[in-house]
Length: 145
Image 1 (cartoon, rainbow, N blue to C red):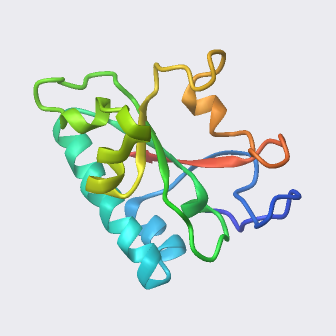
Image 2 (image 1 turned 30 degrees about the vertical axis):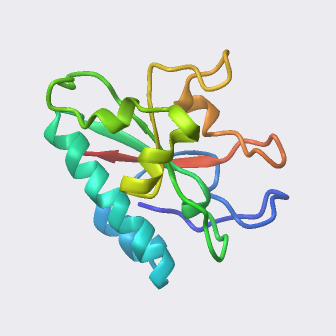
């Protein structure tokens, strides 16, 4: 279930601290509320299908899409590599060139394997739970595929 967004000193409200389990339907209802957000969600949905088809069982959703930002730039995903068949995986999920330009072009968001370090210290799953404006803890969404 997706909790109400809260103020923590960022420019807009964010998810409260923690990992919040949600379904794709709940994400669509809660966050895909404008044409722009629906477009971002459509890319996310296609990416999730692609990841699932390669054996991915879990993704974590973050980025301005899961905030109260009126016009989010994109979304960020950390995906669990456990059980993923690299032969079935869309190669774009490992294409980090040009600031992940091809990922953004194809799916409108950015994707990071959960076993990669985001900042040389923290894995993406942990890194996503820190607000970049305040340094305070914030939430992310977990989707079981």
